[in-house]
Image (cartoon, rainbow, N blue to C red; front, side, top):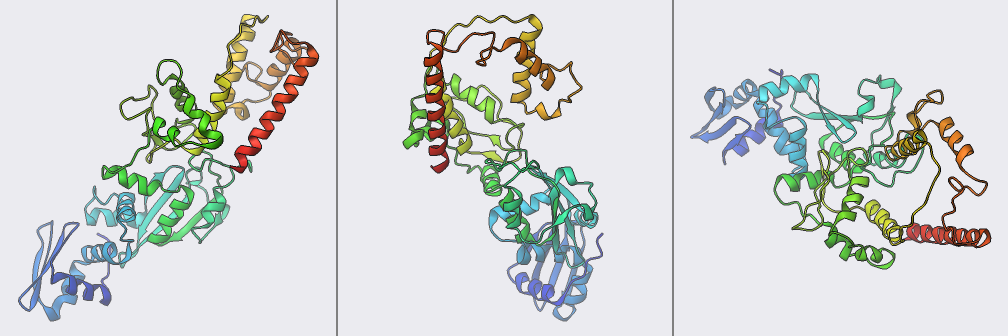
Length: 393
């Protein structure tokens, strides 16, 4: 068992709390006459006079220091307290077993965060946080941080310096660490990386997660987003399935979708396996749905293209690669992959005309080239205005 040591402040706190009785993590203490009774779940029990409490507390040091940490040092907000106990598996390990594991460092993952908890000889916990992909990286290969608010800056851009509009996207940048945080700092750092995830995780565990489903959320939209409320065509919620399949999966978001079409109607697509729940359609989903609402308002047309069977399959491979974000992984020399850059360029050289039409088929076959160009310019301008409007909203 951990070679824990009880200090004077812990003994004094123990004596005060024993007056009302202590029962916590397999440890019990209470006053009896002019002395105290200390006991553990392992069957150990000791009755001591008040003047001998220091010596007795030293014999129960792991239990005393563990009790003291959770009641005097750990944040007392219920969600944060519960989350820190989950990090070290407090409900699954007895104190002695837990202290031995904490000596070496207990690790859990939270999204793309690798969180390690350790304990010192007074029972105080320290927390180290880094990216899961940097779990085995040498300390001197990472940039050290102390301020929990630094996490906000780290989370703004991905490894390619692109802005991350969705903080729970699996694109968190690497190359950093928070090597030594106290309990409150650890939770603030995690909240800065993934806002509200600890609170929602705890609400769900307590059966109090307030879910706002698709229809309820869309009915609240106004202004430029109000158009989404009209998107209820076809068989009920087929379009919302497409939205969820596009955005709300593990490859795109680390949350686990708990919202459905409405309270009575579940969606047909899986909500993912993330540790923390998603309680309502996020702003990224709402913004994408607005654009798709407008696009789905177009009438379908029939186009006839000249493609070989291999070229048809190549178009499908290109769409899959873009949708799954694999284009950066496809090597230039891998010309057997349909989404290979040179394969795609060859297909474009062969099948696009000078106006950029696939197989020479214009998007609007009834319009003249001039009219088509004007329409294209007008649509581009409208799209730019819309994007500007969304960005400023």
